[in-house]
Length: 128
Image (cartoon, rainbow, N blue to C red; front, side, top):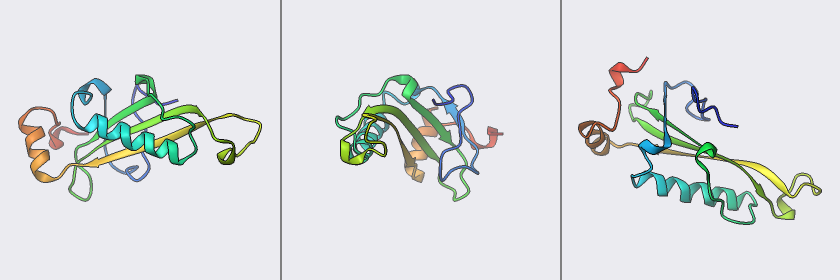
């Protein structure tokens, strides 16, 4: 289960401050289909029998406005229990497995500036 109330640490970004945001904030952008495609590919490589369709509660979205390397990030974390090919099962008697995929998008300066001007990205000085 994902923590949709306060968010949760994402591997590789544990020390960074984040803002948990609703999926709807980014669902109308090109980031969303790109994240879905990457997550599906990860699930298929992990042994999923079919490309998963994700429900909103199976996706966590977090903004990282001020990362230590200077580049802000947008992260999508996908978690879903899916049917798994037998050769990928850790327990041969269990036909399903909970899989996880995280897609991190680094926002280069021109894109970051465009998102800030459009009011879609938080002011890093206001992040606690």
